[in-house]
Image (cartoon, rainbow, N blue to C red; front, side, top):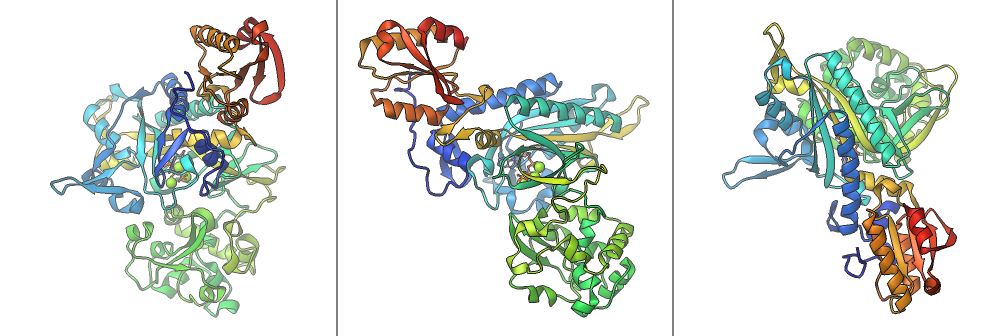
Length: 568
Ligand code: ATP
Ligand code: MG
Ligand code: MG
Ligand code: MG
């Protein structure tokens, strides 16, 4: 590609509102342009990178035996009503109506569509297992779109869904994807960890792992063991006693009557009778931080509780934590507390058995347990997300006897879920087994934020001057930079190299612009192609200067032939 013709405008300054380095560099290197909050155009250079990421994902999905299809983004609301998610999904789901008033949603994910499709297409065990995937634009009206491609409202996702006749099959499909994800993120050059995660809003019965690219800007915190290979999202990380959801159920006022002037409550039954609500309802009263902002949702025991509404923040009273006094004043109101965990953990709360609750309450009733485990800073007014963790850095590892926990920030680039029968049951996706008996299909779902990968890669691969692309994702391999295109020798040699490299299948960007050398070099650093060949005053002698982006100071003077050889 000749740069004079490329639709590429680099920016010297980063736009004021771009906080994340990757967001700044994506804009400055002319890879993306914003249309609206969380909605971007991929410019020609950005599109090339995105295609490479897609291609890696596609190759590894295919290698794992998954089949590619492409489903519609526009999905009828009835499907979502069938699965029960139309309400639960809340404001993140973009809803629209057609001219006849029929309701639709723009797919944030495709469990409903794929399950109804497979239900139609597959009726016999002979056609199972099958794993299907697509690489497609997703829509989520994120509460806080930010950091460029990291949290968009329209973004590119690879989503795959496996259908198995039995649980052993699901296990195989799951680990197949898990290993494919390892290959994908390795090929993308990411420094990542697979961590145990919570099932969250998607729900499901089996295991789940998140793939976390390590980066300070990451919105998740992961705990890893210094000795064994234990690694978990902090949403999930087990504390030594492991009943965080119950600790989270407001034992401050339950467990420490002397401080809060409430009756001492030791068992789940006492709790239930003192409040006059059923256990499940108690657990729906939660105080949590959303996207890092502490927010309280208080549902009084005497209130009709609509689970779905609580889950989507609707109907529940939302109270900003104004002062610690106001928390103390919530006597008789169950105040749950899930810190940075956000909405998804409600389902975890609901999943807890009464026995676990009881165990938790008994534990949490130990004097000052709360302070030690949960609220290191007593002052909720100034609490930050970090203060709400149930697990602290340096704690003993829950898996092995030797290690302690270390925390990292991570960007969730991928997620694998064992869904089980959650969707197949609701939507009636059954098959006939070998004996002719109808059985429910067992599902898994597997997502990768393809566009988010770009941000994660840039977060991990940049320096003060710009992006330093890992080889697998480069927009072009080689940047040919004639210092002066007006110089005939330089122009001729540059053109010759351009043709030669391209004929060998090398992707070349030729900076044939009539610009000052300084401008060209700055742009080249910013765009970050791995190899730069500068064609300067030695062109007449057939010599060029060869440098690699990751060590720009090591410049070598080479003959044009040697330079080509080095690249191939
Ligand atoms: P997050 O916790 O960051 O909100 P999620 O858990 O809601 O992500 P999933 O439903 O697991 O996301 O979707 C699969 C993948 O899609 C995620 O692992 C992530 O890489 C990507 N993804 C999710 N939301 C966004 C977004 N708003 N912008 C870009 N990529 C996203
Ligand atoms: Mg999300
Ligand atoms: Mg997540
Ligand atoms: Mg996820």
